[in-house]
Length: 126
Figure 1: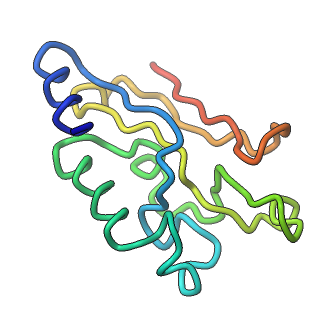
Figure 2 (figure 1 turned 135 degrees about the horizontal axis):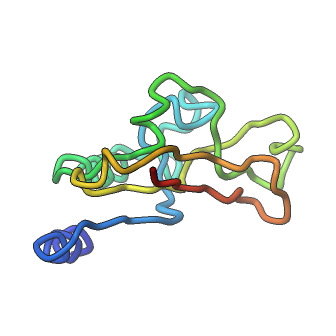
């Protein structure tokens, strides 16, 4: 339903989807992918759901601009000192319309900003 909604919006204007989507898309997007395969947020079904957004023409702009960047997480459990040890997940995204791609200057995770189990993410335009 959500994908259909943004596809309808796309007919009249470019779309930016931003937020905590509660899924780590690829193994590079979490610290312990092997032990997390069946955990909520990294199931095959959830990852396929996220992939359907990309297959519809949207771009995970952080990953597009930083294809090999590891340890770039946006969420850490409050347990076991996870944030201090950077044992996290990248579950917060900007997915943008392909039409906006050339307008993007950067997408960053502000990991030094504390106060939540998530960090802010930014999208900067040229």
